[in-house]
Length: 153
View 1 (cartoon, helix red, strand yellow):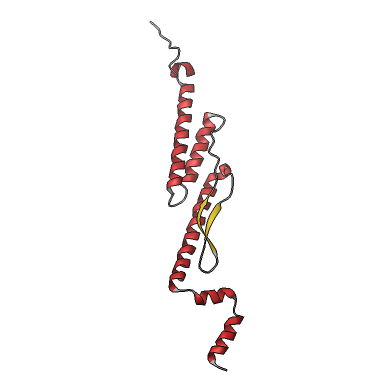
View 2: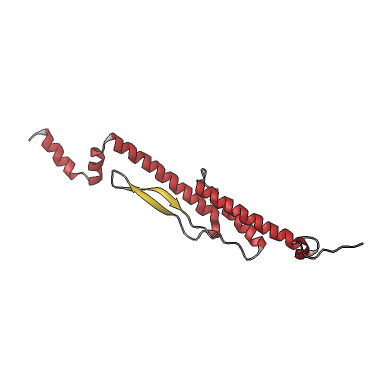
């Protein structure tokens, strides 16, 4: 019996994943290492959104995957759905907008999509604050909106 016959018998008894590891090229191993790193980053990124969103999160993270040369799927993208609707009052809208901004910017490196969501939330907050200012302006909402003006001589 030759040495090659012994090694083929012993490798046949090894699990398929061990065989795949042995047969992967250096380039494939490098790709798998990058995919593992990306998977970790994506999962941390989405969990940061989820934890900051609190009750506004409408789902857990969902991921898009890429299959590595070893047959394993790695997360390469993801999202957490957040309710971005205004509140029932301007005060509630301000609070919701702040939570949305915090959730969008929670990851260490927010994406351009994250920054866009934060910008829309900031606009939502500014609109709600303007509504509050009109409501509490001297003379009431009519005066602040350019309606009736009290003039005393």
